[in-house]
Length: 214
Ligand code: ADE
Image (tube, rainbow, N blue to C red):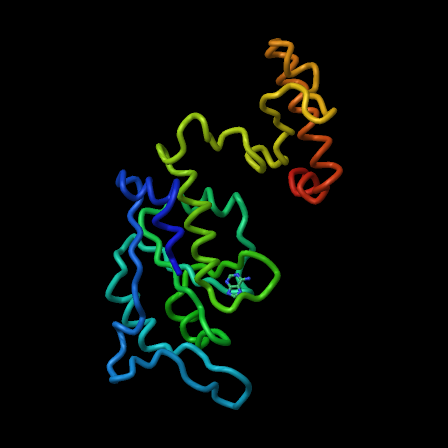
């Protein structure tokens, strides 16, 4: 399931030692033969919950004094570019992927520093959410993106969506590249891009502009 973390930019960052990612199987922290990590909820109700003991044992075995323990789940703080940037300042993050109907509440109370949701929808488990977080954070680490892929100018970097971009050919199926981009006038290009970013954001994501004002 976690194959994407070995591919492409994230895989390369790991090989270069820019980030270390370790996958931990919760069943290694169980003591019964079946490796039970879930159980029925007290009080009844549908589905299974993740038991507290394997999660506590795993985190206690893995944590360092610097660790930040992050639980993935739909009730968490909405993950965004600001949170991604904040997480780059952590030296060690333990991501707990919720499964089944959720986790025993004591995992939140006794183990979790931060609960993060990647959006207002429910996934079957937190694995994809954890990969989204790892991806968004890793690409911001120094050296992970080359100049070609730089994260300085992209969407959200200034609280705005990114301006439209074009590559060759200058004319394609009747659609042409805006004249200003062919002009070689860097000041005019920069001004055009800024205007475009503002207009796009106003049209597609006005909520980002009101967030900036607050
Ligand atoms: N697990 C299930 N749904 C999730 C979501 N929206 N975000 C993070 N983890 C989840």
